[in-house]
Length: 282
Image (cartoon, rainbow, N blue to C red; front, top):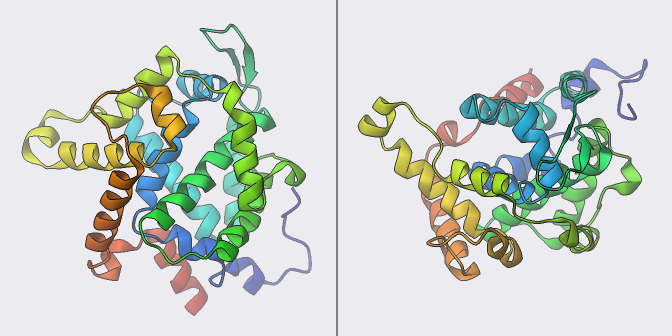
């Protein structure tokens, strides 16, 4: 891949990783509301019938939703905060798992490949748009210049997954144009409606539902993530009883971020970030 480690690269360079502690990516992905951005990305991704068909048929999400979510979060953590070698190996494992997987979208009868660069680009753009827009609407201090820098940095992540760098939106204008171009290809299907309901109320063991606040807590996060979708995406889902105004979603996510930000840093920061700081300090 274009970002593979060269023979002359030092161990220190490898330890810094793909982005490094001075990058916008490090700062943005450390935001305490990254999970809300991740859920928003899943709602948005599910509006592409072929991308969703690949997830439904090949990912094991239905059988092990919590495991799949955990593995996805771990993968983002490795790409962001792992060493360069760790990030490249993690991406290679994912590409290997995707290789050769095909299927047919049931409603349209259109065949697809899981490793189709166009589908991989859709997933990438949904993720970066969701991480960026959620953090900014929650009150993170991200300037337009920093937002464009973030998108340029994330071209590397898209390349690792098999997308040509020239095809990846590298600033906010490019990203907005990409979504405008994609709109005619998106639609709600029976599977996307099931996916949305699944995200809003995933299965949980009985003791978790009864003895912990996990069900209402998760429902609140997922509802908030849905409310942060673009207006056109919310309308496509046609789900009653969910946030329909941008103002309400923005107020909700700002209040949540303000509350979470009061927690001690060791509770807010993920293990990948902590490990990266310890690695660089040594």
